[in-house]
Image (cartoon, one colour):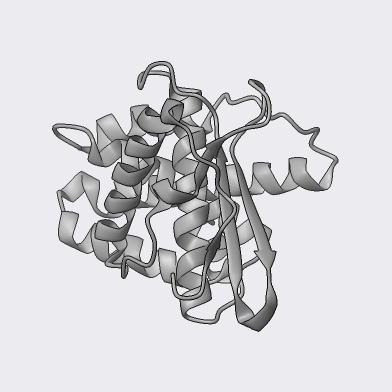
Length: 210
């Protein structure tokens, strides 16, 4: 990313998390045909405590410089779905903010969260040996249905995360009906790219029942 500084720390204990973050970044950039602006692994450090969840740090410095840092949880096993999803979410935020900064476009908090929820499905679905509507529905249920939220529904954060979760669930269900049921993978990839580049209101619209 041109003009970006680092807030991230170093540490050999981050090897697994950095390697996984780099693979996730490559998968997202490949899916959305994005320019590679910065190596996410250079910005990664562990959270301040063992219970801290993923966190993207942003700071606008002088001369238009955007400083970034990404805190990720420790990954014991790549089969830990919650930890894996946190890492995907953190990398998704990093990639999205970097792309929006390159294009000099703003992004809302809700927009970031909706995209991250969809990116969880994108990354995990792309890792399957074979993807069809049934396998996608099973993954979608694990990601979006029967989940627990850390923040109460009546709070600003609680509402934001629930809206993002619901919008992503509906959007992925739409992909299943329109594309996966008919094995129209090329058209589905184009729809995913369009979704990435639109703003909050269009993301919400695409996540409504059709």
